[in-house]
Length: 471
Image (tube, rainbow, N blue to C red; front, side, top):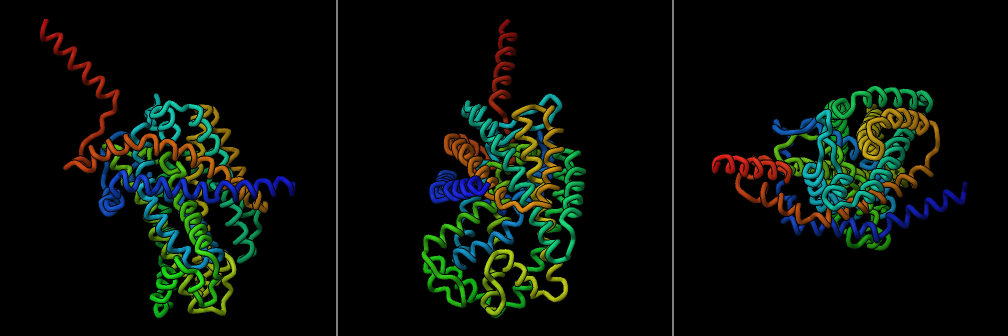
């Protein structure tokens, strides 16, 4: 077992090393340039999020975004940022933020391809995601199958057992609640929501996500108000140490710029999932007139996740470390516990409540990703088996120590990323074509999308009408 743990740990470290990081960031930069910096439309995209869409789909654009955010806004936004600071210094926050800004272009591309290549089932349900882009856009069915296999395995790891374990461990440590009780509660909640499918999941997430994000952000704002004298110093330290970690001071770790960049980028990528291929699975179910509208809405997920929440968490942590150097700031969980302990009476409750809601929402979001991936592999008949195993996994994750699962899940996430990036790069021409048609042209966003099949049927109908007229 120790040998297996070592092999999995080393494989995870190798996969999430510089090659994959450079591939992800390179794709972010490539799409940012080729799509003429789609990030500049972020405020228009936020407005579209709350508009009432007309078009084919199962859920609203906002519900699809809420489900995707539920899966991405998790413990990584809290503990992950603290881990990046502990390992790479305060400058890691800057690189995490930069990754979020660039990653918006990739999330835009993922959402566009998801709607562009989605299919409608016999019962009217919309299915899409990187697997359909790979199969229908590139003819790479085998690569689509691999993507789905990695997605299913990742859903049990980082999307389920690890999240449940984070919640149960914290509740046991802070409130003495037995992990088995937490496991039963999480399993029941997840099972009840999963029964209703995507509409049930999106409905719960639409209520859950704004609440949990607001709850957490209010706690951060309170701490920032308490640390107001140190905000300028904190921001200055973050920017300065991004390029010179030795200049951080105030008890921060020093080191090489390369480590600061690596940990900041890695945490940013892991948090917002841009390029991983998970979020477009639910984006494909959204009601939308054309692929670009939903692509813009999907892009805001990375904006809220990394550009806003991760950046706010980073500033909260760095300003608190400067203001209270006597506190314990050695690792991610310890940092968050120390910082939220500064809030009188309700501080620990805010932290535990935030972690609980973030983790539970992540489980719900990933349950949908895994379900659609398993459906692609085996059809509707295997969904019930997946749901049962997923609920059982939530309970098991709550009562076990899961370092092995963490590393295994990291590997699956990394392997998901590779086929997804292949589809984005090879289909970038279609991204440009659709963007030119619907975003760069006047009133293009209001234009309905017609697929090649729709166009072919239209031409055929015109030809038949012309033939009848000639007769």
